[in-house]
Picture 1 (cartoon, rainbow, N blue to C red):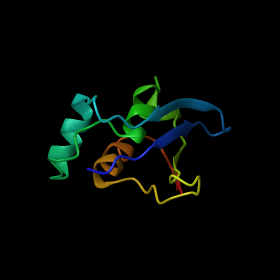
Picture 2 (picture 1 turned 180 degrees about the vertical axis):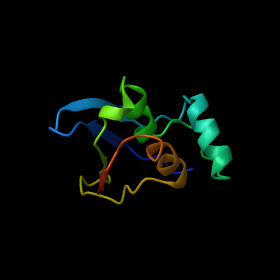
Picture 3 (picture 1 turned 135 degrees about the vertical axis):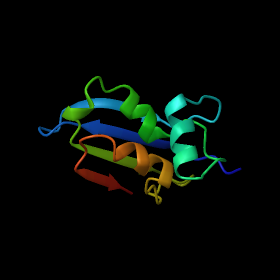
Length: 101
């Protein structure tokens, strides 16, 4: 399994940060399990940065955007598009804009 250092930032309409999360390879959450089953991605139950950030947001209706960032070992931006599990969770929120490296 390749491990990535990914950070996700959830912001409101004015750009204020509502939640920040990083991926974890040791923790999970029931929401990840639900998303994994719904998207038939059973191997993806560890806690992803997008879900970790959303779990820190008290009111998902205030969430307007999420930015997902990943850098490679050399410090260059790398692809960090949300996976099917994360898209499933994001679609349950009021998020209108997904930005990723």
